Picture 1 (cartoon, rainbow, N blue to C red):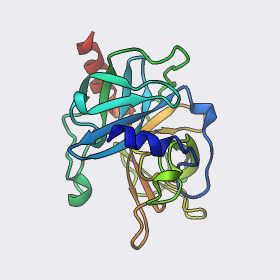
Picture 2 (cartoon, helix red, strand yellow):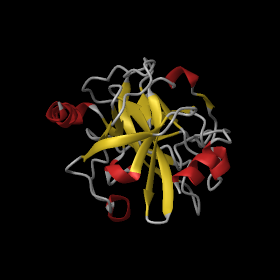
Picture 3 (cartoon, one colour):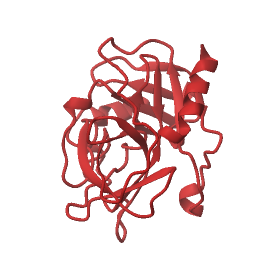
Length: 233
């Protein structure tokens, strides 16, 4: 089933629904994370922290044997281990409960040498209206898998409710937002620092994308991230 997913991804096209742009400027910071469960398979995005450690969304991965990291044009990378945040709750979108949807994955072999970690944003509270850039390999048109596989970006702004844990992001003018496959992707500040990881998207009516993008802020979770990595050394 992973090979089937790769066949779809190789068609290129777009990611991020709504108004978007080519994400080449972030291509050495973002990879794909493929997973399978039983007879189904899917993919997410992920952010490079080291050449062997990737930060993604916890709902994207379960067991290391059933996931792979992927850089377009390169062989699949097997995973050595996975750490999901202890406060992740898989039923959070349904129950509207608080969840820290983050996971770290370690690859068995290193990513190509050009891959590097982005600078991390510091601890701060952002004001409503603050502009961010989201990026991911997800679909450019909802429910159309053939529009996935190319790294794309979109501009969004912070909206209420303001939180010390989550960012709620939208773009009322263009309906830009994350969609299937963008989970685990980065949210960058205007000066190019990693502020959050995409966790959830919501649409209007019967749609599931374009109205709202929810992301988990990195700064409040730095202790868990750094402690988990240190424990792997």
